[in-house]
Image (cartoon, rainbow, N blue to C red; front, side, top):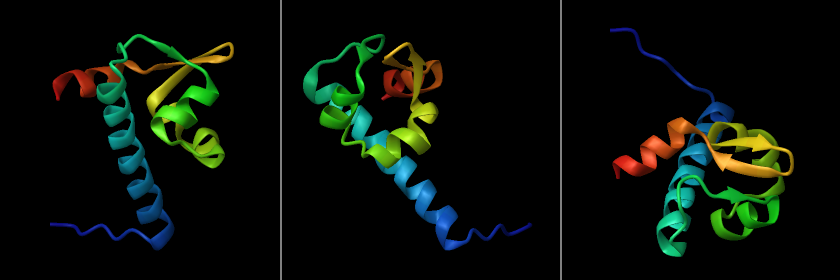
Length: 83
């Protein structure tokens, strides 16, 4: 079996994405949000604890952007629904 080694930066990125994913789920459950709800940048930072850097680097992992609003991607919506 081939072993894959990640450098520190890759590990940090993967860990941050995991933590943001958990934060999104917690924010949705705690606040009773619907999966198709639209969010502003301010709401994402307030409810899901995204930093400005997170919005730049990772928002496309979890959200689709339409104009100035963000909505969960289908993949993320499905993942949240499965919990």
